[in-house]
Length: 73
Image 1: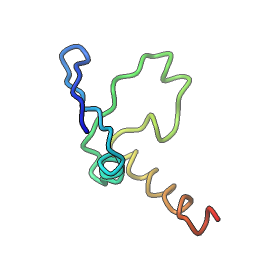
Image 2: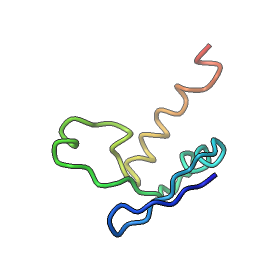
Image 3: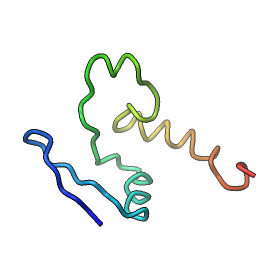
Image 4: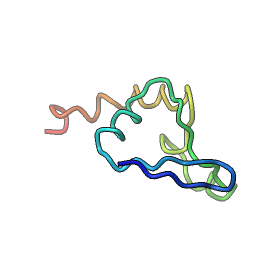
């Protein structure tokens, strides 16, 4: 299921299907963008959730092996 909402003049798609979310998050091209953060938010939040584009892809590749099922066991 998909829902469309507007953030000012910017449309946003909200994915509610786990398989679609998985597809978007495993996309290595990074063609989805996150909403802009306030300056205070940038100071408080760092890490994968705040990265965009190539920086996001590099960090995602580094972290991905940590979450394989065999390692989690």
